[in-house]
Amino acid sequence: MAQLTFHGATGTVTGSRYLLELDGKKLLIDCGMFQGPKEFRLKNWEDFPVAPGVIDEVFLTHAHIDHVGYLPRFCRQGFKGTIRCTYGTQELCAITLRDSAHLQEEDAYWANKQGYSKHKPALPLYTMKDAEAATRFFEPIHYGDPYALTPEVRVKLKDAGHILGSSFIDIKSTRGGRSRKIMFTGDLGRPHLPLLKDPVQVYNVDYLVIESTYGDRLHETQSANDALARVINESFDRGGLLVIPSFAIGRTQTLLYVIRELEEKKAIPIMPVYVDSPMAVEATEVFENRLADLDLTCRAEYVNGKQVMRPQKLHFCRTTQESKAINALKGRAIIVSAGGMAAGGRILHHLERCLPKPEHTILLIGYQAEGTRGRSLLEGKPWVRIHGQQVAVKAKVESIAGFSGHADYNETLAWLMGFNRAPEKTFIVHGEPQASGALAEKIRGRFGWEVVVPKLGESFELDI
Image 1: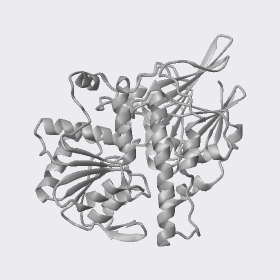
Image 2: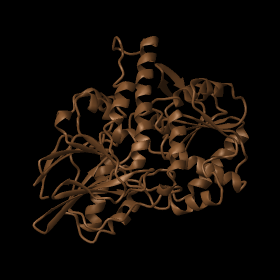
Image 3: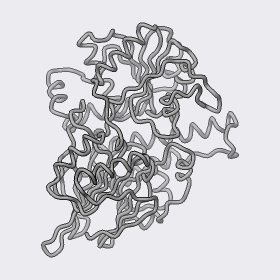
Image 4: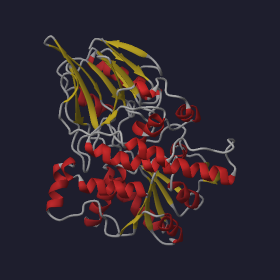
């Protein structure tokens, strides 16, 4: 028998943390940071419900902060085991954790300097030193290679098609000729995304833990490329800046790929494209150095000499000085800056400058979690709070959902149709309550499976 406890990503799309106790081992699947409403963010400051020192291994599905961002604090609190993931995830985590720590330190600095925190002094959740220390616990494994957790339990990582290095965590126990399996999807990717391979089809699973970010929604049927071309052309005609809050890993690289394609097709004018995020710059270089993890079409383009993520007038902004220089821009340009939900980072400075002016455009291109500035902009709020100040929203706000790396509910159901038998229990996580509930009902209605939407801290006995 095994026990599965949900310590995050219940009732929210952030804070993925699942504890699996199996064969005398304590495994943590993902170690994510909570984001969004204050009630969730405060959980990052709480002690982990289980002493980190008793956890044997951490397995990571991918390198997004909501799945890995708690690791530096977790390790500082006494974790001494091993962190396992794909090689791509390891390389990206080295970037994301440093960047997250830098943002934590920077936010604390500004809060203390400008006095907008009630804490005296404001402190970072963790430091750069903590992030560097956490990277020393990583031991990556290749997709498909079996890792022997115990003589009777093996773990495999399978391509989830969400971002570079993303994986399903496939854990199988075999005793007396009887095999039992639990699988964690992490974030389930979509078919036919630029750059990435499609999610691997899975067949035999006894227990399934699956995300539900888009459990109640479908992606737009309009081509995301066509929608992006429209927004770029309209922004160009207005003569202002196009500011795109974007996740540094996955979304930014896809954007660069599509902008370069649209330029080649003469569907958009060629204009300067600024990637203002050191993490996005480093992540793009990881993508370009891990071509074996990209899809066949992308690799074929590289064989033919194309730099597929390099629009003609691309500028990478690594330093603070390079970032500040963008403020001098007067003409037309595209600014892609982290983070994707406008929760923090350099994007805030660009929003602070551009939101009050109607000639500029803000383009939201991914999921905007409850309680984030991105959600406020998406909902048409007349102002947002940035650096302790109210900022009026006068710029044109656009949204394109087609660039999401998350499967919508039809794509999720289509993937589940590939299973050759029903899991004994399917757990729906990583979604806001309405989305998780909707996906649960769709799976029950379509397949007749037993589906559970767990609560925070809830535990389940599994026959593994």
